[in-house]
Length: 410
Image 1 (cartoon, helix red, strand yellow):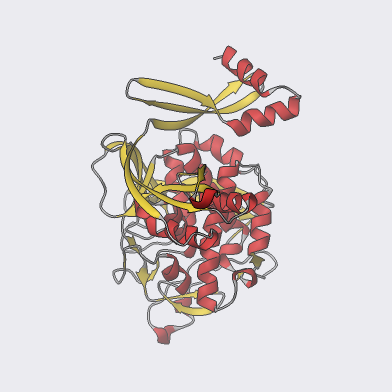
Image 2 (spheres, rainbow, N blue to C red):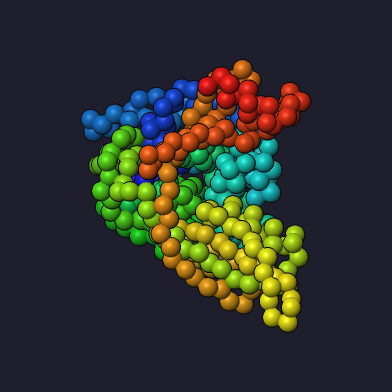
């Protein structure tokens, strides 16, 4: 099984995760060129080599209107609180922080030139942050205005990680326990303990530790990306390693400040999945469709309905959600919240899958992403629907003719 393992011995931030995944990508320069044209206003992303304690990795720079975020060291101004390290205190040319609501963020993401999958993942990551900020400050999600995590450089971090996850296409993402650091951090709300309240809320049910390093190692952005993509947290599995990526942070500590990403094959293509099933006879089709899409947005492996007959001759729907076994409680809660069911059944199954990866090929119509699957002596390829649908719309062609034209050039 194609597995991505993220080692978070020095925590995680959005730019560090992006850099580590970029080192695993087959065409980092092409990826960055594409990233800089997806429509994040005023943003330019670049990568450069970085060496920490003899380890060479990648450092990401994000410029917004030609300027990079400014870092302020809290300990220079607050000696009485003891050693304190600041997270990146983002401020740009006009000297003011940009405050964006969840609606603003969702509007921006929805208009980016990326796939629907990337838009869904990025919005889901921001919802995790919004819920954490809502809990920390005691206000509804709709009234949350992001500070550091709402700026355009953070949007670039989150969207790029979602894009890289889509293109690397791991069948499972695992992570180590997360080192969160210790001490205090200065942010838009003032001086806060490490981990910051929003980070601590996001990392509920995730194994974390601190105390060895003074400073904030895991940011809310990094925490939300880990929580969204990682199926479980623990020791690295036995893996046939293919690539290793090092994402370097901006600050220097007594240990190399980096996230390590390992990409390889683990065991065979088997994994445990959970099927959550319930009978529904009192929801409208629109409400069921809304619940289905929401579960997909939250990372469900599959969600589908089956027409059934119920007692007293009533017609109903068998509602099924398939998820990774480590996410069972999350999806039980979501199904109870977004459907009318009063109970559900749980079945644990073993799933066998082909190894999958995304490739981009050049065709007579332009670049097209291909899904390549292999294993058990079988190889399959299929063009990405969104790419061929875009070509069909732009050129006024039938979908089948686009597919035939692509296949004739293979």
